[in-house]
Length: 345
Image (cartoon, rainbow, N blue to C red; front, side):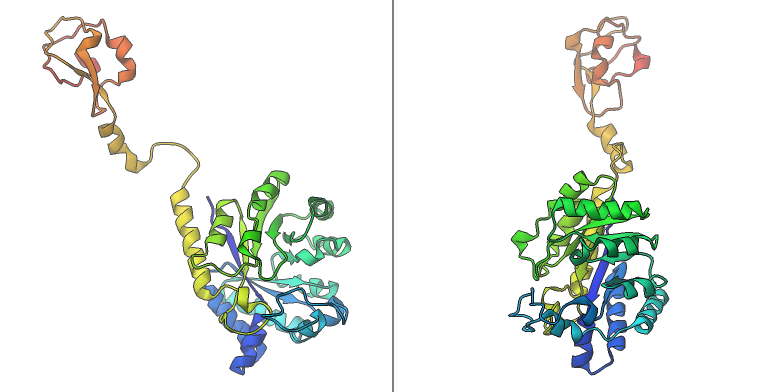
């Protein structure tokens, strides 16, 4: 069982950290990258967009306004869209320097184009699942695609996958996702991971999580056990910060717990090949049974069924050969409780 590829979704959380710590957003982003790297994450992910090309000015909020009171999407996204190609180039370069993968979800064609030379794979948001022209544009880049499938029907997923396949996308990973912020535990619906694996057996399946982190990171661990090969979760260095995503993001310690869980599960699941393990060789020999004499036997006597009993250890003739042994002569005098071997017969 291979550990999942773990993505820390920064989104735009680092903007809030920059504000409260009075540092530049780029410095805050570097700080997030360092924290994610230290937590054992495989990749960090940003979001590349401009409010003017993403939403109309009156788009209503779809998040928990008790946590994030901004009433329109446009007002929220306008506060977090200052990065351009230059900034993402710096972030990509920094990720290479610290040896962690860089990803940013593009939300427009311009972003998709300038990110091409910065990352190994594309992430497509659930919100763009039916934006087939945009999916086709990304697929033509010839890179792996992580495609979130929140708030969708199977028919919509099939359409998107068909477009990716038509453009010969080299690797597709469908990310089970619930498009609700935060996702209630009872709505996490992790069994969809198995459903997607059944419907799309040739594709990789992952999970993009929006639940509030549970104390033991059981949700992410369960997703892994159900077959998620890629796991993504929002990341923050301070869950108490106000903002759209901090309240359902994982902290560095949360991610460390998840990584430790993945390591432990990988260790205990081991291999799917059934064989005798090295640690079982001695117990196998000592705990299995051999045919043992129930009485003293003289040389030349014929063994009867009642002369034999199966006892530990398993260093002699296996009980499965009892029918072959019964009726044979012994070569020498043997004492009761002797473990029979073939050279005695």
